[in-house]
Image (tube, rainbow, N blue to C red; front, side, top):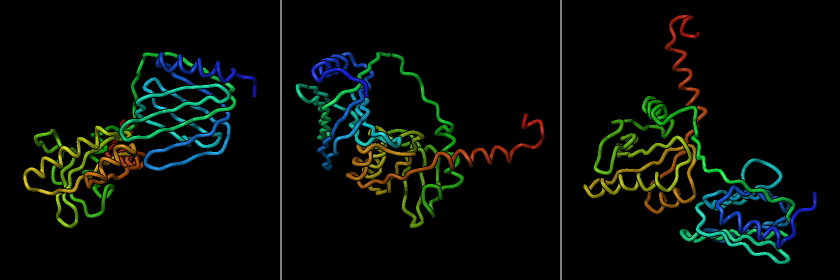
Length: 251
């Protein structure tokens, strides 16, 4: 590795970049320690640290695409450095602390960009809803969809169903990673029914969900079920092909 900034220089740069809410990339030899819902510590190794403008932190190792450590929704990031660069990413609720200690820093780069941009997924929520309406077994065997977009006081339930036991099921759909807002929306629907003396099941259906969302669901006695977007897309594509009736439809 090339000679990078000194520990003091790295600490100064990081502090400045974090204050500026910049995109930050740092490459260094680090150990990580996490304490929160569980506890963990790594051995020293080369790591790529990414700090986003919203304060979220991801730490990648030299292999694979998933981060080895991360801290979403960070409340504060504190940086110090003498012999060792120390980054403390603190989350207040739930209480979590990720500590990154680097004895060597090879590279620090930062940039500022205000353009959020949009994210496009090859299926939208309406398409997912329509496929699940036709094939509710994608969520659960024995499930039967009773109504789509059922209006209730807190909003519109994406799918209102019954399971194989005849119990009512309230389904909230998301086409991207479901977060705290999605979990709380489902909880509001369930609380509405409970206020009417009905105890339905609540299922959040999405490709994945944040730890916070899953924790909220578990505390409320609700469920998360994962869907495979590639499978949904394949079903949509096959359905579209089946509707084509002439060669002109393929052009």
